[in-house]
Length: 558
Image (cartoon, rainbow, N blue to C red; front, side, top):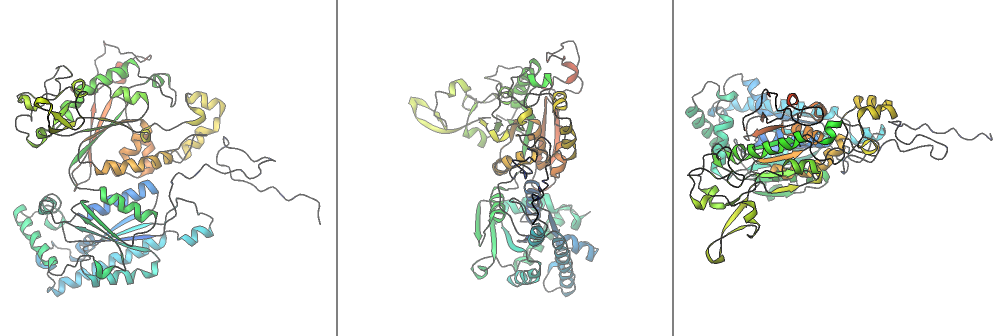
């Protein structure tokens, strides 16, 4: 036998800033811990179930984006209606969905089969668990893929056929049924999502609504809800947009996460307002991270934001609305939100908008800034200072009787999940200083900005892991929400809310002293508006002070 020692294994070390191979540590860990605290998942096929106008397509789109954004799993929606329109090549009126219409039934079956064939082909192209293991790609937090089959799938026989057809894919099949017993929601969906869509282009709205209601009646004649006869299947049943949720045979991390996401999802119109903190002292110096206070320009933005919020967030479409406020735990976000008023509002003010729908007067005192002109004394807001003497949820009436529940506008919530990306060893350093001590870091970061992790710090993927639970909370809200956070965090939240792929997030522009409003209406793609409150870069000196003599361009009126 040879006396020569065995060759030292060659370790893959992604960054020279990590521990290099040495005599004492010949095989160092190649990278940090997983960025997702999840277990491995199989390929999953979610099959939608439900009558028309029950929000199935909305659920499909949002679920696919959530899974791909936060877990990196390939996700795709296969909408049978799109296939049906290609095959029929004509506008499909209600009689097309009559089960006695044999020619239409044949075209509908063909569309279903084509969509299913494409789904099986797509999911077969993503690596299986065994392929990942064979290629040594298995890691905790890896996922297979998610395909969503978006159609009514309204009968037990159709669902049994789909399960049989998908057996050879090896995928886990989960049915997601959307049941709506609230006729108001159904009518809203018909009006906003169906009138003017591909089936009713150029059709009078009243005719389109009547025809679509006739289509629903055709489906109701054969529709069978999920229930005990299909207890052998895995399914999630959502009632009235999350008011009630039932599950059957749901096991595993990702299926459980899907169900939790669905219970928080709803179609009510609401807006999210994103704002970076005001300019900080570290922004002035070009330093990363830290917990610095605001510069003079940042303090001015905080004052302007406090003037802007009551006029533009407290009132939605001219009606007083409950509002929420989140900040990170770092002082620059808390200081940015510190001047925002927190009036105590009687619950009856929200239920009775008459007399309080006009916005507050400009230039009024902070305590009165949210007081609607023309409101009666019972509708006037109580100042935050006075509210300290009141119980948190009730308004004190005559003789100390607690007679009416109240709401504190913009009651601040502080979340460490919203803190800026942690730069680890480079906290408090400038990019120029980093280049001097680690020239290769800039190259590594540019190669994979979303996956790059600062030495002993965080990556964008680490931020995703801590934002995931907050997104569930955010999705559940019906009220407008103002988030004051940091550039990296807001890049991810902006990209998620706007439906953009996560790899684009590090390139999103989130400017200082600007509020971004993102609005959902539950049917159409989200849209954004930007409000530049200033001070803008043109009016800020290099030391963070404000040049009063400069006229700022493009600034939004407060």
